[in-house]
Image (cartoon, rainbow, N blue to C red):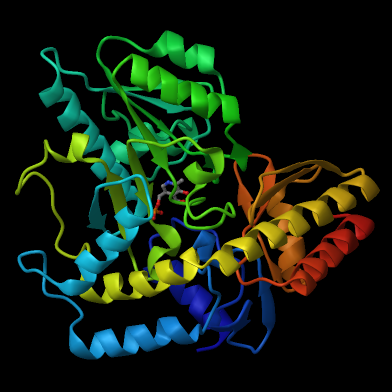
Length: 398
Ligand SMILES: Cc1ncc(COP(=O)(O)O)c(C=O)c1O
């Protein structure tokens, strides 16, 4: 099919929930994507923080092939080795004692909401069920996750939402303290808000939340779906901040693009969940888990983590220098291999200007252009992207 034909057919047969640029992607190699007309794009999106190892990684492909030929799926009615191996890896390298596997970030959020509420019901004489969330957060689109997402634009026309969620301003510890009541069971927070504009939590804020949760007997839940798994330069973002949660959600890069979500939790919460309380047909399947084991082993590699730190610092220093030269740039946010840049232009318009110059970037929140390269990016790719950004700002955009 020609590009125009694919686009016309998409408009006809696909529910129009996405606005897409006018090209059709066909394949990837390293940090580049190629469209059906043979054009090459430098990828600073990574499938929205999914493709940590870019495209065509040998270890991932080999794992995929060998597990696919043995067993793809058999349901959670039966034991499989890759599932327990993945859980063993995740708990051995994190604060957690147990893992629960599902199929997306959103589903992982649904899991933590249920597990936290179950804890709140069982642990106290008077059940605690309220959950505090942050302005600008993004946790997903199903009803529990949507209700936890404190951005009204995602709620419009879908009310009534699930009750029991309270929103406070992000990074405002005093507001959180004031919002806590006798029936608050948990605080849900992203250590860095990936969709809400690339806003990092303050160190003191996360430390304050930890103390508050300890004092008031509440659970601290970190959503590390976008920023966890090495993008911060630490294996988990909570390790960067040195603040441990009681529960954590993971997803995006964990299975290299196969659908996956994970909840990591401690026994203090896990003990209240029994067979039949929660479940999924696909979650934790052998193919996904075996690929995730390979991905996780690669992410844990200290060389990879050092590389992310080095390249993250390089990306931010390069964008910082560009800001010094170009007054249209107002702010550079984030750290590690995520950056949000606020300019005087509409983010969407800038994304299109990059695309026309064969660099893929995306937006974040109301005001930022987001850079989310594969973790295997090299300095020359950062230079190439920054040169393109410079050229766009030199020429200006309408
Ligand atoms: C922080 C965060 N939480 C939850 C989600 C939802 O994950 P998914 O799209 O895999 O359902 C996202 C997706 O962007 C996210 O960035």
